[in-house]
Image (cartoon, rainbow, N blue to C red; front, side, top):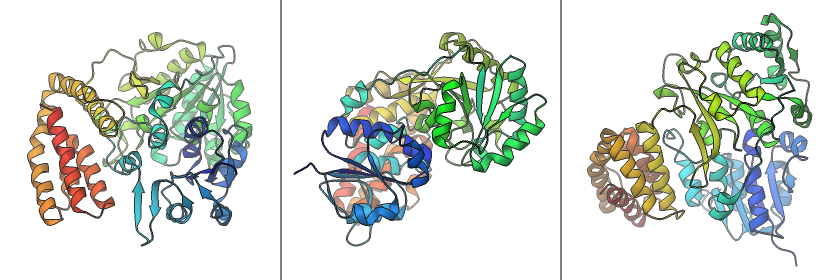
Length: 468
């Protein structure tokens, strides 16, 4: 009798599906002989099957067939209710992610899946990439740490630079005027711009080509995903917002320059493989915002076509991080993708700017949750706390100052079963919200039971211990 299959539910967009590929590779290594089933959007997985790790794909309308199996594990990475319903209905030894239980109540299984749920509207200090969060509940940490991805290709003689024009949200992409001016700046540096986009970008592609003074090959709406993967092999560089084709380009070895703008967090969804680059506005409100709360998109302002073209020209020639770090990019921060000493995704800022309070606090919260869920020992959060306290004392003090209020709320809940203030987590200072937001999700997920209150009280005590 064959081994039971593992089912992954990934009914999100193309980029989310591609960020599931590392999980698929790790599962095949850790669970040899178990067939891998993936339920996804047919329009995405069909053209990508040649690039995907080995798996059997099903559209959601094939859910009837999926219910006929008993699974070793079901991993739901989708936010759709239909996925949670299917995850709760099938027979399985283990469930991870959202699933509807017998009472039709949505519960999230898995420490890391619940942590990811707590990031909704609350991801300023998160330093775990989406691809890692997909896997940390079910793949050995040593497998993740030990994985080495090949660096992207360098084709200095290509001369062709791809520009992907669109994004899922208009706030995440530059304007048509920007793209047209960038195309002209690239031409002035003897680089040939090629415009890419799906069917939704056909009109945008025509507008960019019309606004550009020089020639730009417009391929918007003309290529399937598989064809794009092939054409990408001829490009020296791919300039793109945070979008699905960026992840496809990175997966296929095409060097990417990610123009990270709008309500995205590149620590979560930047190009996964080492050797790519991320450019982000160097302002407080651009550090992993969930939604823009300002009157306009100020984070777009520093992205000037001339600056981007100068950077692209150096990248297309094969210049590495040390040389790129010397470029003058006012108002922008340039990062290189790689792995940290922890074996996790890292964005390394290329200039010599010392870590500020946000970066130090992010390191602490990464160390705290990694320790909480068993990735490493107590020494890491202790060391990260020392770095925060020694170099950003006011931020450390603000976090410590909120501990008594956490204790008051949690002890009241332990006695009464409810918070004193239902908006407690949202009203917490930003530096404390990683913990209060996760505590809120944990309580909801466990019906505000007495053991759940005791658990979140322990989270606070663990925080206090790290700060001693």
